[in-house]
Image 1: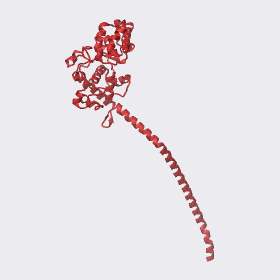
Image 2 (image 1 turned 90 degrees about the vertical axis):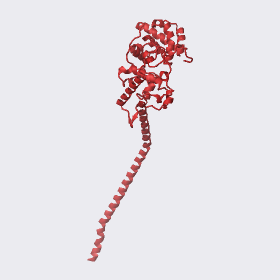
Image 3 (image 1 turned 180 degrees about the vertical axis):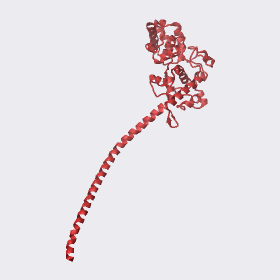
Image 4 (image 1 turned 120 degrees about the horizontal axis):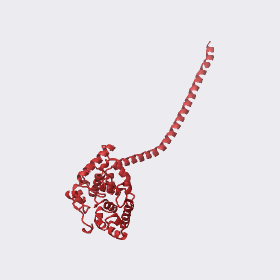
Length: 340
């Protein structure tokens, strides 16, 4: 009996060996799978690591671009970009404030009729209104009508316009536009934008000056002062005159456009200068995102003021009575002041 028991014992260990073998095989398989997963994970991590710098660089560029756009297009108030509604309110408030500062604002070119204003505006390119006003009395005394100027001797006109600079090109323009008025419009200045811009030397800016001030038809005059100030105030980030005109026009009722142009241009000439804006003497400083670009000390800023704000003559020889009543002084004739 004991022998039989001994002989049967090894038979019981066969299933145990098979189980152990299965477990070992399972462990090896699991180890292989784990190793494979680790390999795949390493490869994936390596790919991500290679892509990450590129993605990070792109993200940095995008963030920088967004910041640049926000800086030029909208002031940040309490950490938030200015909404369009807030921009409209601020822009209109600035215009109201400027209307109180310059209640006598007017076109600073001397003129008695649409023809004189048209010619004077063309001559004002690349020079001051003061210089034009000192020059045109002689021109209009000799050539009072489009018919007269269209038949003028170019050399004689050039000599008159010499003080305005670019006198040859300007002579060609004023004689050319005079011929256009005679041939196309019976010697009369047309009151439509599409007609005015057909004349030599007449662009949208010149046309809107004439329409707004000679015909009472609203228009925005986008000159260098206007462009500079509306960008400083972040009314728009546009740089092309036509786009600036459209962007700013959308902020105001059409009826305000002509006076708005006068207010902005007057402020640019007297206080908000290109190189040294008189921030410390600016009446709209609290509304200006660019405050601090110029002199902020009130006493030093006052010394930067020009024309009547600084106690000096204005640009017109024959300004409106309202301007004179407000303390403004007329400009001197050509040659009356050395270096004028």
